[in-house]
Length: 320
Image (tube, rainbow, N blue to C red; front, side, top):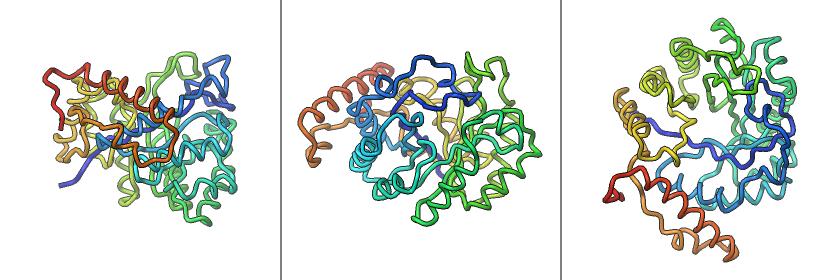
């Protein structure tokens, strides 16, 4: 039996130095601060503990560009690696060789935010993300033995005929993973009045990608308003789904629906979005040589997350 899973991105900031991607929430956000719009380290690490306990592979560590200094990022990445025991993927913009070498002991791959590959359209949608910069980063990844991924958004104005551009790029750079999203119109952005792509159109991109690249890891973004299509995403070739607010929605009808949709597609769902796993924070953190204040704050944040997850589950709690 094939498996399916939920892939959880861990976001570490809501600041971005670019803020001109036409689809992005951050492009509509004013008065951003690289300090104030950071997440706290304890909240990030508590989330990593939740992911580990519930079998949610971390899709990537993500955030806006230029929020953290290199040593700060290295500290976050290293600690998530220590918690999970897994090397991580990064989605933090274009990173130079110095940073890639610094992060290499703790990372499996790097994500290039390609988003769109239709000539002319791409330059309009993401004017401050020149493709040659991403390709240059990928060349460094090849030299350092780091895997490569891309993000791609369906519904920005491309047509299915533009699949040839995606196919050529993936072949050229031997991309290991593709995360494909459907456009979600966001208020205050250029696309706020767009309808977003139809399920049929979105699925056609998933299907063609899988047919062209049988061995590439393929992750599909989903909307809460389109959960009926989740089984179709798996049937079309997606290995996992993402973009689900799993902590806030844990144990809800939406969470059960995703697991049911996986079963409907003939897949066995790895991990759980509905069954709470008890986490012994003291046991999890005891081997790390971190200061006691940080450990205490992680436990405090973890308690808040678990309380939120518990709030959706009938008593008695179904601990696994």
